[in-house]
Length: 315
Ligand code: AMP
Ligand code: ZN
Ligand code: FE
Ligand code: FE
Image (cartoon, rainbow, N blue to C red; front, side, top):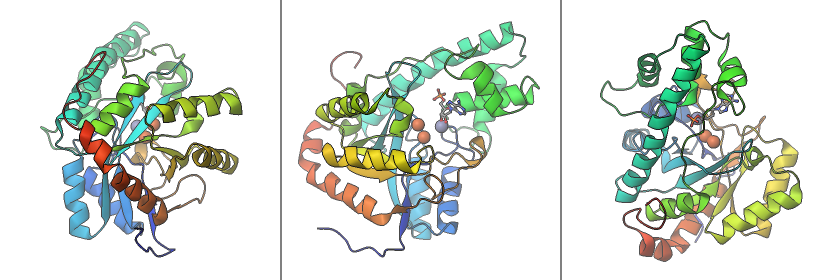
């Protein structure tokens, strides 16, 4: 059964808050979505579900449909990146707790290495400063995910670089002078774990895979489908119209649900507007209806796999 939605109803299924590396609080993201005239929004912070209750409460208050989500980086050969979005995850599930703990350990091991290298290179930044930047605008006790955008801001504050873009280009991006990888889940673990939190797994911004050609891209997506991928982000701020067209073809070929969102981060990613997924592209409510329908259809298999995120390899 598909709910009838007005053709003017738009959604944004990819957003970040202060729970990770966005600059608006979860409640403020909801308010901004309401002000932008959106009908529904998903909050998809990196590695954590910590903002989901706040966002869900605010969404209920202001009358916005809300999808609890997450975004996870999985193992993938550089210079590409493979991010998986989780939708309809249960914020209180033991699987989410276990997954977040592992991912935060990976960050906590990496971040001080980056800081140490920056210090060796003559940039006077400290972990305390970076943590303070990550905590800005959040409740003092709130646990936040500390990411490279916070380190980039510390580099700007220290006068080491002029802009956060320069911080990534020179120091923090892949191949930068202070780049260190963090331990990640394999794609299979990430997808499996999202299913165990009750969610659907969607490949984020496939353009960032940096696949060499269409055949290589098709191969990667086919493999991800085989290990349980449910959807693919067709519309995204980094996608040109021809990219979205290609990803839509792949969605059809591999029977993946097409999704889309802005990847809004507040001022941490200037130029990205809530509700716009590349140029003036908007994402229809029908996309969320289709995703919700897939969620209902897979209810049985998902609930069979629910429970703790315990399995092979690192779990
Ligand atoms: P982390 O998860 O801590 O490794 O940081 C990843 C975040 O850094 C993502 O949200 C990206 O938005 C941001 N990021 C990665 N590469 C760049 C870049 N070259 N320029 C600006 N932001 C970037
Ligand atoms: Zn981010
Ligand atoms: Fe991402
Ligand atoms: Fe994102």
